Length: 233
Image (tube, rainbow, N blue to C red; front, side, top):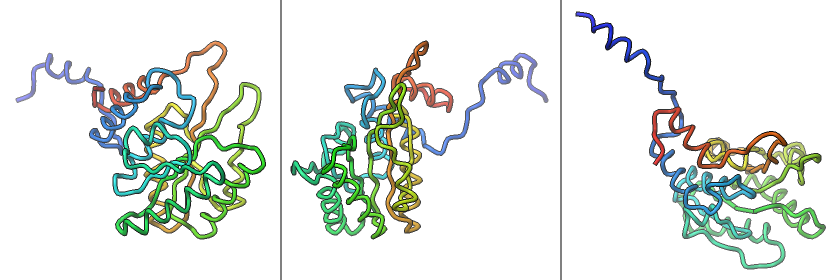
């Protein structure tokens, strides 16, 4: 016997739930992490959103090393190691990540939160040397960095050269978009499992359009969760 017309009509009005590769549990974990950050209700100005999302995507068994203070990583990984050295931070973080993986045989990779890459002489030599070494040795590392797009200028650091120069995969995401950072972290982990070497997750801070309004990270997350039938917390 067919359902009454009123029932069929009400069912037809329900929005279709879209499929997501990110489980509802993971979406809620991302939401809680972003909500705990001071920047959760304003557009991100650094890589903290990407740091939190990447750390959640790779899992608790992957060591996290902070070349600089990384509030996003610290929010979800209290065991993250902070490099105290004032010089050669990226190189020191790379060595610390390798040491952490040696102490944890079950770890498939390590995450290095490098912050915003300085363009000054010694600082640039440091991170370029770290990237070069990681790429040459095909190390299972994911570097999370911050970058800025000026209103009338290109990126502060143009990381597109890393792939032709070192063979490193660079995934650029909106600094406010935790879902995008989570997705590319899972792709970076796939590259690592296939022995394709290290990757860079670049969190880009894009200036607000003159006549537009930037969406806060939690607003983006809430919209994504509602679209996929997973109400925000």
